[in-house]
Amino acid sequence: MKSHTQHLTFNVPKRMDFVNITSQVEQALRQSGVREGLCLVNAMHITASVFINDDEPGLHQDYKDWLEKLAPFDPSPKVYRHNRTGEDNGDAHHKRQIMGREVVVAVTDGRLDFGPWEQVFYGEFDGRRPKRVMVKIIGE
Amino acid sequence: MKSHTQHLTFNVPKRMDFVNITSQVEQALRQSGVREGLCLVNAMHITASVFINDDEPGLHQDYKDWLEKLAPFDPSPKVYRHNRTGEDNGDAHHKRQIMGREVVVAVTDGRLDFGPWEQVFYGEFDGRRPKRVMVKIIGE
Amino acid sequence: MKSHTQHLTFNVPKRMDFVNITSQVEQALRQSGVREGLCLVNAMHITASVFINDDEPGLHQDYKDWLEKLAPFDPSPKVYRHNRTGEDNGDAHHKRQIMGREVVVAVTDGRLDFGPWEQVFYGEFDGRRPKRVMVKIIGE
Image (cartoon, rainbow over all chains, first blue to last red; front, side, top):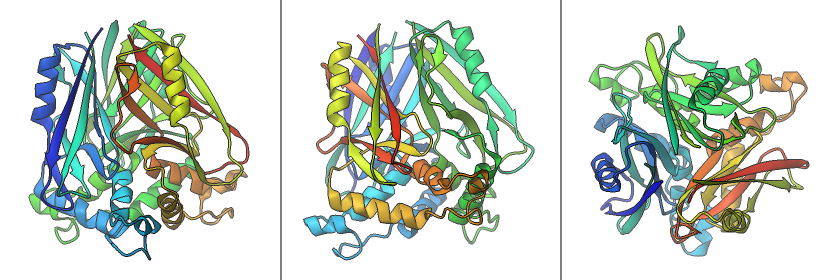
């Protein structure tokens, strides 16, 4: 069994934004030499997500509006108890639960075995600082 | 290490519905010959989910009502920017994020190692056409 | 390839609560002898979650309030059709979908390869009875 570990770092200039990281995951897969196996991609921070969906800017803006409605940003300590700790990112911990922490992708014939429109995104909900994503590939 | 790849195809006659695919995943596992490992099951389309829950029709209707409340179907380009692309399935991309893209199931002694009520479902949110589910099993 | 299977049992005294199970997952990993691989942790019951986030009591209370708003407890058969079966836990099946069934964690150098604040939680939404969590580790 082969295994390969790689950390990607992102510094998203906005509080909330989505970055297409598919090509970076594909590059990690090529470096791994794995032809058949599983590829885990997860946010290493708890105010961020990794998810798979469409690379369509209108949809991304829809997601942002929707997440803002489901878990609005509010830095005050009144809405989110978490912000009583001195943080202002209570909302980000909620948005991340909707969008998920991780994806697991099948590796077949040395490629990410995707459907027609699947792309991997890093979802940032408390940006403006460097944060990491784990890529772990096992197989042979 | 053994690996096994199988695509299942579903053509759900309704826009939104859930299909119990547990026996098809079990069949793929038998074909793999894997006794100990992991089984990934994921939607290959970004307007569909694979999830694990109860096979109870009342619950499934509850889920549909709830998802419709959280992300209502609206084909107009006013509610979902995504529908300005000519699509009418903006809602489906949101429903899929709530229900998730994939499940990973432990394989023990050649069986899906499930709790008492766990069943695997394909969740369709933009049906009426053939769509695929990936089953990838690795182990030995 | 090595594999290791372990069931953890929790009997949470409240209907809804979160339990930090990180040290128990780490213990299972040590017992597995796996140095490089993947660790799956999933709820074996469909009214419970396993998720990764911050071990901060204010945040946990925020999550509970938020989940209660998104899917309120209501034992009557009027709000949740599922409760027409004699159950009173329709809400719990919804809360579990928001928080997720499982996490997959990278194993590197014999450790759970976590970011700075990542902790694994068992999320109970229909407690007051013993329920199980699966830990499955594969690798070498």
